[in-house]
Image (cartoon, rainbow over all chains, first blue to last red):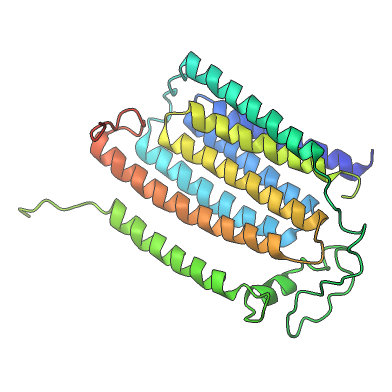
Length: 196
Length: 104
């Protein structure tokens, strides 16, 4: 087993253990911190898969944004020393059963499916490169971080208006973020009493 | 990276998904349920990245889907936390069992 595989299995154990503790810990603040660990582990997995940009986005948005937001809301709404009530025994038994059944079913489907891995038959590049004007033919596809998944290619294709460009979803997401921002302000705004 | 088969990464993301589902089933606190939803979204992201890396290493579509999912998750978390704070202001609790005013 090579070093790379060992790193992967260590990362997976780290992610799964911290995710499990995040959903079972009785103290809500500890639960948020375990979630933080799980999200950084997932960012490490993206680094391991040589997707540096996605890993950076994961750290910036999830660890820097969402977890901080969750911790703020915990401080605003909970007495953080208090333990959460334990789930009902019947409910947790049914949850474990449903989850195990779902996992076994999904695993059986995955096990039986033959994925056509890249490099076996589609190496010829017959479906063409990503079709960006300017970036060109992407040499050494998939060979490393400087291959296709570099920031340069991501930026060029994300904002390209040609056939494989993603500029329309990009703009739609920007409008969604604006709407979410205004919606948050409106929802969380304190209503003033009428008689001043 | 090539020493690990794709199946193992998919098993990892499946396990993460069902851990999130377990949290969603058993927790009754809105903030912890939101955390479970974040875990589920992350497992979907792992799948997109792994498929992109193993099956179509010369394309970028999985990366874009992951980026959009992260953006939408951020928007969703912000709106959810605004709703949670408003709910706490009205009910002094964020337990889903406590907000039964409009329950039929």
